[in-house]
Amino acid sequence: MKKAKKRKKEVLKNILSKDDAQKIVAAEIFNRITVSFYKYVRITDADTLRDTLWRDWDKLGCLGRIYLAHEGINAQMSVPEHNWDAFVENLYSHTEFKNVPFKIGIIQDSKSFWKLAITVKKNIVADGLTPGEYDIQNIGKHLSAAEFNAAMNDPETVVVDMRNQYESEIGHFDNAMCHDVDTFRDQLPMVAADIADKKDKKLLLYCTGGIRCEKASAYFKDKGFNDVNQLHGGVIAYKHQVEAQGLENKFLGSNYVFDGRDKENIGGQIISNCHQCERKSDRHVNCANKACNLLFLQCEECEKKMQKCCTQKCKKIASWPIEKQKEYYRKNGTGSQKHFSKSLRPKQKLAHKSPWQKIISIFN
Image 1: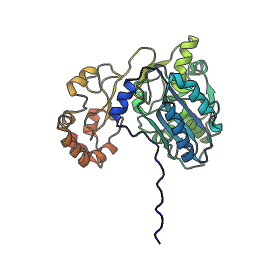
Image 2: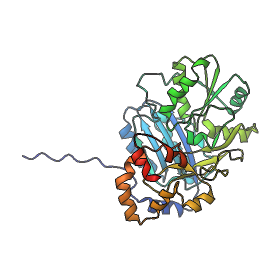
Image 3: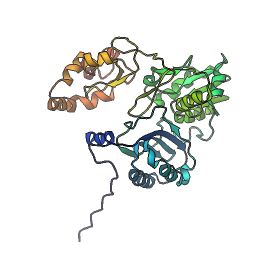
Image 4: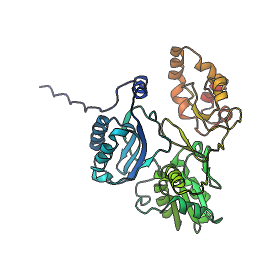
């Protein structure tokens, strides 16, 4: 007697192509609210919760990127304005997420997301640490924008940017420690080593929306730092409070955000430069050669000149017929993408020496 085949679980996801989905969003005649939120909370069955949220939020027309894990939720979303109240009611109906605070985007853009993607992961923020290595409940003190400004006025205070290099390059607080890293997991031990002799100092941490600082503050408290503080709600909330309360803005440049907008300028100035001509620019671009896909800063003039590519070699590859590009990507893309650092500039990429020099040399 044959065994009955096990029925595959229904996969709830957007099945439209990217082009078709973007066309639908572009044709919308209503406004959307760009919002981010997170909460560290114990989730016992993330898979079931994931499917429930996907069904409910798909019906409301929500788009975005949401991570669920045993430790909580991390979400960046675009919600139809006319369904905002229904979305909030639905989210708060789950006891795990009751009264989660929202960070509303400074610049509202209905094109920030084009699909709804809810993914179950090991962690909502990858830290590379062993479970139980620190107590996520033992976090630092939350500071408002006004309190953060006041603390920065003390020359003995240590201010640390807990974001990646490609984020801090286009914007950061004056005199903050910024590290040349691509991932949070690389940054934690690096920062701990750099400030190991400052455990008696006031430590100020900040990031985009607060989620990385929540973990970092607990990590540093476990490492013996006595006065650990974090900017509550991150740079997103800081900007709101500065404008609403008429505070001095101490953030220089633009805040990198993780959606289709890429950045929110704060204060009006541009502090970073195009990686190709050194003109002032805070425009992040991924190299048009998909087998490279390097993230770098490129001004509008260089984008036209280089056709959105980081080197002449990549420009040549990107001009090939699409089938030839696909063949090239199949042979070189998977390996090369893994070993290009996001924090490398185009010129650094060419000079970068690593065990993968043979792969990298194809872009010289």
